[in-house]
Image 1 (cartoon, each protein chain N blue to C red):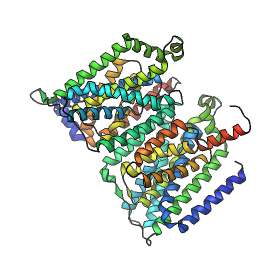
Image 2 (cartoon, each protein chain N blue to C red; image 1 turned 60 degrees about the vertical axis):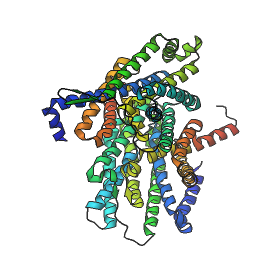
Image 3 (cartoon, rainbow over the protein chains, first blue to last red; image 1 turned 90 degrees about the horizontal axis):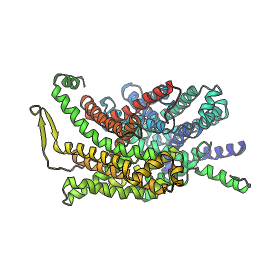
Image 4 (tube, helix red, strand yellow; image 1 turned 90 degrees about the vertical axis):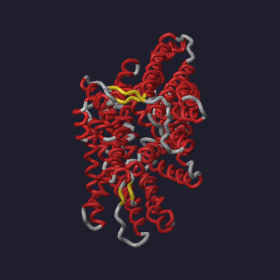
Length: 318
Length: 300
C-alpha cells in the first residue's frame, strides 16, 4: 500500500468516525466499542506482531486506567470533567510506571514463557482487584453520572475514543517509520543478533510496552466512563474477553502490518456483534470456536492472505 | 492477615492441619502437571486446555455419582472417558498446530479452553459441584488436625497413578515409543514408529490423567466450569520448576505447591488464593529467568 492510499483510507475512516454518530445514532455504543477494539489491536500488535512478544497481559494497563479514573472521580471531589482529566493523566502515569516495572521483570523472558507469564499477570491483577475492598472488591465500582444532557455522554465518549484511536494509529505509524520500528522488527527476527549489533534491546522492549500501556490506560479511563461501571473480572481486567480479543483481532487482520489490526478489529467487532444478535446464549461458545478456527486455519490473517495472493498473481514462488 | 499468621505460629497443630491438607490437594496438582509435562516433552506444546480437561473429568464423575455409581469407581471411568475425549481433541484440533509456532498452539488450546468452559457452563450450569464420597474424616493430635478420608485416598491414588504411568513409560511398548519420539521424532519415524499415533496416544493419555485428577478433585474439593485456568497455571508452574522429564520432581513440586497454596490461602484469606497462585507463577518465571540470564542463557 503506498502512502497516498494510506491517507485516502484514513480520510474515509475519519469521515465515517465523525459522521456516523449523527447518521446512525443507534450505533454510537457499537462505534465507541469499535474504536476501543482498534486501540486494543494496535497496541497488542506493537509487541505481538512487530516485536514478536506475544502478551496476554496487556489488559492489565487497561484495567489500571479504568480503576485510576474511577478512584480519582470518586475521591478527588472535583467537578466531572476536571476529575476525568486528572484520572486519565494519573491512570496513564501509573500504567507507564507499571509497564516499566513489569517490563524490566518480564521482557527478558521469551516465547511461551512470556505468553503464559503475562497471562498470569493479567489474572493476578483481576483477582487482587476482586478481593480489595478499597476498589469495591468483587462488586466493582460505579462511575459518577455524566453532567450533560441525555445522549450527550455517548457522543462525548464515542468521539473521545475515536480521538484516542486516531492518535494511537498515527503515533504507531510514525514510530514504525523510525529507527525504533526497525529495532522492533530486528528483535522479532533474531534477538541475539540484534543484541550483538549493539541495540539496547531491553530498553527498546520496555519502551514499546510503555507506549502500549499509555494508550491502553487512556482508553481504559474513557471506556470505564462510557460503560458507567467497572467489574474487576468482566470489564477492567477482562482477560478472557478483551485480553484474548486483542490477540485475535491482530492475528485476524494480519500480525505486524499497519492496517491489519485496524481491519481485524472492524471484522471481529462486526462478527462478534452478529453473534450477540443471532446466537444469544451461545455467543461465547461461538467466540471460542472462532478463536480456534482463526488460529488453526487462518494464522496469516487478512493482510497476510492478500500478500500471498498478490505474490501468487505476480508469479513469485514460495 | 497478621492475626492468621500469629495463629499459625502459636498453634503448631493448626499449621500441621493446613500443611497436611495442602499436601494432599497437591497430589492432584502433581497428577495434572505430570500430564502437562508429558505433552510438553513429547509434542512440544503448552497445553492451555489442561485445566478444562481436569474440570471435565470432574463432571464425568459427578454425573456418574448422580446416576448412582460409587464415587471411587468414577475415577477409572472418568480416566477412560477422558482418554477418548483427548483422542478426539487431538485428532480434531491439536494435530494441526503441533509443528507450528509455539504461540499458535498456546492460542489454539486457549481458544479450546474457552470453548469447553462455555460448553460446560451451558450443559452443567454455573453452580459449584462436589461429590460426597461418604467416608468421613480422620482426626489426629487430639482432633486438632482433621483430614477427610477421601483426601487421603485421593493422595494415595494420585501417587499410584503416577507410579503406574512411570512404569508404563519405562516398560510398555507404547511407553517406549513415546519416549523415543520425545527424544528424536525423526529417528523414531525411521525406526518404524508411527509418530502421529504416538502423539495422539500421548495427548489422550494426558487427558486420562487429567480425568483422574478431576475425579479426585470433585471428591476431595469442588469443581466449577471456570475453574480450569488455575489448574492449567498450577501444572505449568510445576513443570517450569521440575522440568519435563522427572516424575519425582513433578510430584515433589506438586505437593509443595499444594502446601504453599493452602498456607497462603489461610494467611491471606481464601479470596486471594487464586491471586497467589498466579502471582507465584509470575514470580517463579522471573526467578528462573534471572538464574538463566546470569549464565547468558534464556528459558527454552
